[in-house]
Length: 143
Image (cartoon, rainbow, N blue to C red; front, side, top):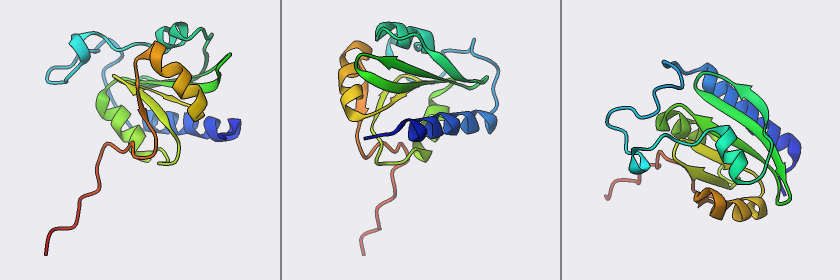
């Protein structure tokens, strides 16, 4: 079971990703050439939290990433939203493989598997269990 200190460490990781990135603000929701679901703006931390009945407690408020702690009847979890898919991908590439994530357009939810399974329906996210990396490891060339 994932402990609160481990979840807090992942929230801090999201803040580090934000500190290493640049951008033009949250207003640029749909960038040219990005494949978005129905070209709609991605959900905010507040919108994701509202869908699952949580009052978010903000942990990271940066230009490129926002992270909030939430607690519902289903359990505790962190909501991360990113300015771009590339930032989300970079964050997920650094997240430990053994932690499950619920993933959507420019957002991730990190928490225990039982919690993510309960949130999957309301958030319409994809559950990434152990192989959530977005940059696949190249296979060895056939000899």
